[in-house]
Each structure stands twice: as structure tokens, then as C-alpha cells.
Image 1 (cartoon, helix red, strand yellow):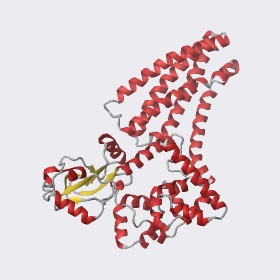
Image 2 (tube, rainbow, N blue to C red):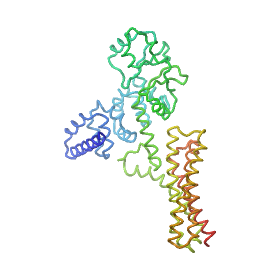
Image 3 (tube, rainbow, N blue to C red):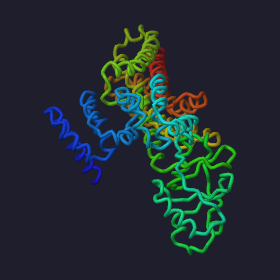
Image 4 (tube, rainbow, N blue to C red):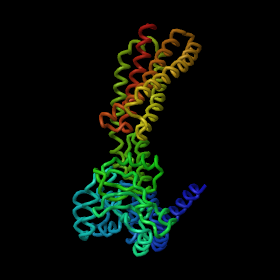
Length: 453
């Protein structure tokens, strides 16, 4: 219910803003945007066609432009940044967290990046260099260096006085990190523990010295799995020697990772970029999609080439041309079901070397069971329709073989592609379609050629 209300409210805002811009009421638009949180402003920008988006961005208060940029998808952010002068980009990134700063700077073209860094002050330039020193997609690229550290030999009263002098805590702080004089991580003191114990107690007595940390080079997907498994709100990031405290990762960053992984899996299967702007220019979107349309055309031509070997059979029995699409279609659906589940299992870390054989055996059994069920059904339908029991048996055999192949291919293709460092979500469906089409056509028309001509 709250989600439906939020969608209706955003739609109402978008309609109101669009109408005001079309009527030239820019003062009213500026007032609306001033009362809108940065996350909702980002949603309005992403939901607007390019022309409206440019006008909206010019009316966003420069003081919150950095906050809005943090919330935008990469494709939309790049389009907006291209409209901005380097000095304005540098000003917008001034108060960004290190992880968001690195993400924004990575999306800049080299020439724009140099101009932006040149417009920064020395402190921000150093932050930018540090943020970009970590590999994209790693824990280091996700982390923020804004942490609260304390020593193990002080009392809780000292810690409380230190926090009052500090004045505020970083967003999402549930632990204070305990370090030694060399900034080596020792443990964590939960804020709840700090607030519910006697001020006379010493930090070392109450801290969690077995608190799990995240190596700076760990892949962001593995980090997300740890957060999901342990229900963390935040986690400390240390160097690869598990010694020096470098920063922390908070749950809001992990939500972004999970969302991006989900979008990537869904859109990659259609050959689309997970960061693609819904309202990108026609030519730009067309170029991106043409690549996979071309690949699909090649696979379709390959299937047609296989079918061309049986032209003589199709001339003799035209009914085969009518039935020829059924077998590959069923194999494609069955294979896609398996492919989707396996890609999900790989993404969640459920599939590994210890259980791959079991998975292949399971999918082989499912393919055989479905093959028997649907083969018998299609055999009965075709036999009664054409009064030809041999034709029914032929299509039943082809259906069984293709569903069997679909199960094996759907389970094995993502695993093989993963071992080859190829994204299964991006290439899996294309390879699977090729396999099921060729096996289905060859099994049906080849068997028909043997027994019906």
C-alpha cells in the first residue's frame, strides 16, 4: 500500500512538473524541486524525456545537485554531467561520500575527468585519487572512509564525551571500530552496547573482538551475500592482510548492489544494458540493441541452415512445416526455465564445484520426466489430428530429445560460460536458443526423414 501511494505521488509530481514546464512556470518548478528530496528528484529526472530532463536539471538547486547525482543511474548521470561545466561538477561532488565520488568520476570521459579533478581543491583531489585507486566492483569501491574509531583502553564515558564533541555520527553507524595506534582493526563496539552499559566500563571488556571484516579486494557480489547472510547494517573494510582498517560499507550501498545485480540479470537476457536510460535518444538505443539483434539473426540463420537439409522431406510432407515450430519452442521454454534458475543460483553463490554434478543430474531427470509427459500428449494430439500414428511417434521422440537437451543445456551453459569468464546472463539465452532450435529441428525433421519418406 505505501509503495502504491509512493508511485501515485511520483506520477502526480511528474505530471505537475511537466505541465508547469510546458506552461513556462519555471518559478513554480523550482519551488516544487526545492521541496522534493534528492532521491525523488532523481526519480523525476529518470522518468522524464530528454528535453524535459535538461530543463529540470537547470532548475535543481546547485547545493543539492551532488546528492541528486548520487541517486541517478549511470546512463542518466552521464547524460546530465555532459551538460555541466567541470567547475560545477567539482562543486557538486564536494560533499559526496568516497564511494559515490568514485562512481561519478569513473563515469566521466577522460578529458572531462581531467578538467573536473583540476577544478577540485587539494583535499577533494586526494579523496578522488583514493576513491579511484580501488578496482570497480570491489569492496574498496563501495566503502566510505567516514568511520568512528576508538581505542580499546578507554572507558565508555570517554567514548561518550568524544562522540558529543564530534557532534554527529555517519549515517548507518551501528558499530564503533576499535583500533590500535597503528590503525589496525581489533574489534567493534556496538552503539547499543555503548548506550546500555555503565560508563565506567572499558571498551576492551565489551567489544566484539571476533567481528567479521571484509577484505578490500572482495567482489561486491560476495559482500552483498555476506550482508544478506549476517543481516549486517554496516561492516568494516580492511586491507588484504586483514590488519589495517580502511573504511566501512553500509546497507544502503548493498541495496544498490542487489538492485543492480537483479536488473543486470533481467536485462542482460534481452541483450540490454542494465544502466540503459529508458528515455535515451532513439539512435543511441537502436545502436545498443542492434548488436544482439544481429547475433540473434545469425543463430536463426544457423537453425534455418539445418532445416535446409530436409527440404526434400518438407516438399513430400508439408504437414512437417506446420509442426516444425512446436518442438524447438517447447525446448526453448524448458531450457529458459532451467537457465534462469541456474543463473540465479550462481549469482547467489549456491552453485559450486561440489554440487554441479547433482544439479546436472536433477535437470536431466526433470527433462526426461517432462519429455515423457509432453511427448505422450503431443503424440496423441498429432495422431488424432492427422490420423497418422507414425507421425505422432516421430514428433514425440523429437520432443523428448529436445526437452532432454534443453534441461542439460540450461544447466550446463551458465556454468561453462562462468568458467570462461563470460557473463551467463548476457550470453546464456543466445547459446541456449541456438542449441534448442538446432536439436529440435534436427531431431524432428531427421527422424521424419528416416521413418516417413
